[in-house]
Structures are given as C-alpha cells and as structure tokens.
Image (cartoon, rainbow, N blue to C red; front, side, top):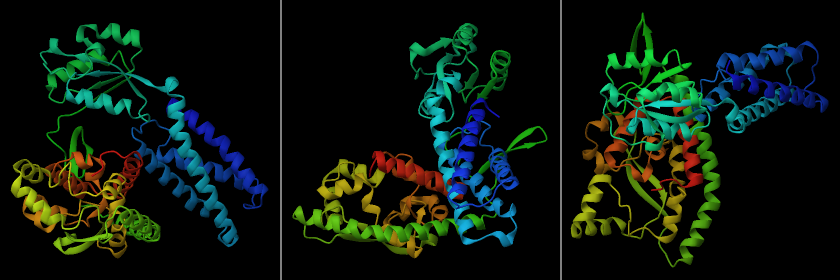
Amino acid sequence: MSKIGYLKITIEFIFYWILINFLQEINLLRFYGEYTIKLCALYFLMQLLIGRYQGKVLLMYDEIRLLILSHLGFFFGSFLIFPFDSWTIRKIYGFLLLSLALFLLAGFNSRYSHKVFRKNFKHNTLIVGIGHTAARLAFVCRGNSYSLLDVQGFVNCKSFGINQEQIVDKDLTIQLEDVDLFIESHNIDTVLIAIPEIKKIDLDSLFRMFKEKVSVIKYLPQVNGLVTFDTKVEDFDGILMISNSRGVSKIGSYVLKRIMDICAGLCGIFLLIPLTIFVYIKTRKSGDKGPIFYVQKRIGKDGKEFKIYKFRTMVEGADKILEDLILKDPLIRDEYKKSKKLVDDPRITEIGKFLREKSLDEFPQLINVFLGQMSLIGPRPYLPREKKDMGDYYDDIICCKPGLTGMWQTHGRSDVDFEHRLVLDEYYYRNWSFWLDVTILFKTVKQVLYGYGAF
C-alpha cells in the first residue's frame, strides 16, 4: 500500500462508519453487530483487491474504472452477507444508496487527496532526456495530479553520445555528470528515462547509475508510431512479450455498451425537445427560415449507409457552395483535401458556430444511437464520398458502429487531419473495451464543458 493509500483508506473508513450509522438511525438499513463488521470488511477488502490504495494509478480514468469495479463488487457481494429471505425492496434500496454514497465519497477522496496533500506525497522526478518525448512526458506529469510525479529537471545525455534536439526548458536541464548532486539537493526518488532511441548498452548503464540513488526507475520503450492493436505485456519465462489480445470474448462488454447506448439515447431524446425549441427560436431571430435539422447519408457498420441527424449549422445549399469554393480557390481545395473540413468555413451560421463550439449540433444523433445505427462511442461517421480516401483503414473501421464521440474527438478534434483521424479510429477498433468507452466518455464531457478544439 502506498503512503497516500493509508490516508485514503483512513478517510473512507471514518466516512463509512458515519454513513452506515446514519442509515441505521433513519431505519433505511436495519442490522447491527456482526453484520456491520462483515460489511465493513467486505467493502475494504474489495477496495484492496481491486488495487485502489496501491498508488499505481496514473490517470483519473483508471481511478474511475477501479471505483466502479470495487463498488459494484461491494453492492453485489453484500447479497452474500445476509440470508436471502431477509432481503426486501427497502433493504435493496438502502444498499444501493449506501454503495452510491460510498462511490461518490471515494471519488471525491481520490481526486482531492491527491490535490490537497500533493506536497506531502509527491514524487520528486528527474526525466532523462531533453527531446520531444521528454517534453510530452513532462507535460502529462504536470497536468495529471493522480500520478503525483513532480518533474524537477531533465538530464542531457550528450556525454553518453546521445544527441537530442533541446525541446525542454534549458534552465531545468542538467548534464549527466551533475546527476548525483542534483538528486541529493532535490530529494529525487523517481527517474523516468525518456529516450526511446537509446541503445540497450546505454540503457543498462543508466540503470546501473540510478539504481542505488532512487527508489523507482521507469523507461519509455521505442514504438514507431501509434500502436494500433490491442496489446498486453506478458512475462514469457523471463522474456517480455507484447501480445495481441483481440481474440478474447467480450460479449458482456458488448451488452453493457448497448445498454449504455439505449439509456443515453432515451435521455437524449427527452433533452432534444427543449434544445430544439431553443435552436428554432435562435435560428428564426437571426432571419434564417430554413429547416432546423440536417439529414445526411453516412457509412455505418459493415458499410451499410444510414441517415444521420444533426442540427443544421450551415447555410442552405452548403454542399454546392463548397463545390464552388473548391473550384475557385486552390488553397481551400488543398485544405479540404487534407482534412476534409475548413478551419474558417464561411458557410457556418452564427447559431451554427455556437452549436459546434458546444458540440450541440451532434445532439440529434442520439436518435441514431437509440435506433442502433450508431453508438455513443465509436469511429467517426464517414461520408460515402470519403470511402476511397479511407483506403486500407476502411475494412477495420466499418467493423464498428460509428460513434457520437470517439478517439477522434478526444485527441484533437478540429486539430486532427483526416489521415490521423483514420489512425485513431483504427486504434479504437483494435483496442476496444467497455472501459475505453468510459474513458472516452469522461474525456468528451470534459472537453465539451471547457470547449477544447471544437469542430
């Protein structure tokens, strides 16, 4: 268990006893004595088995996954604590409320214990490398409170014969020969080796250099491009082997995905009514008398075309205007050929710009999600005319239902060109899991709230 793990388990233990006694006081749960102790043991046993207090979680989305699994385990495990004939609707409701309250508290505790007590539990970190990989790694560390990695500096390995372009801050860069003094003066306990192109003999030398000086050493292996197949690292009798686990049956995950789609579709249809009224009023006030919705054919699962629904964000006759712009302006033609969209599209209306910034123009697609033509999470719904441009990616991408959101939205949105979108969608297909969907969903909500990279 990590140091911050002891803090989290203490806070949650105190809250558990307060909450369970409160629920018994209001007679929502009626049990005492050994059952209270058994439930307490069950709850924290689930947290420990899932690994919530080990300090290995580096991302918020991993923590959310562990929270969901541990609290579902607690809720269903509680049915084994009591005799089956003692369960009533009131009791089930009480345990559901207890599990939900504990889930929310644990989530709040996980998030803010890392923020409030960061200075007490952070790991002073030294990154070996000064190039693009080191810069990206430092950016993630500084923007991610869950890892508790506090980057203190970077190491230039030029004396090792490793010449990298200086990308990171020069003021935070030290030479390899100054490492010992820096580790001591900054109380470094973690070293991250961020030179993917490093030779094995040099990597071994760096490990020997740091192994007696810090408690944790990690390195980033060389990977050419984005790994687009579902991978896991296995210890094959002392040999690290990266395997493709795509063939594992995921029937339960597919069922959960469809349940999530149906629930989201139902909620979306109800919310669509007031949103449509709002869009109608704003559109008419601007003098636009055209239709509110826009219907367009897109490529669906197995290559079958379907009609997608969106709020209209462009002037009427936008497709014909685009054809004219492409013919007349070579710059626009090159831009559209590269990314299949225009950054400063003159066809977008005033209300359309607002809808796109908030991603509200996609809201009617929840009808497609409910009907099963789309999924809440999935590859981008491509146009039939883009089939040729999709090339070899086409066969993989059409194996999934297109999504209302996906990798393409959470990894750049309008900043991602067409080729990169295809790579991200192929990655989604080859790495899909229900937890990947949950991660993308949380990232999408965050981006919509903060308005990053709207398209």
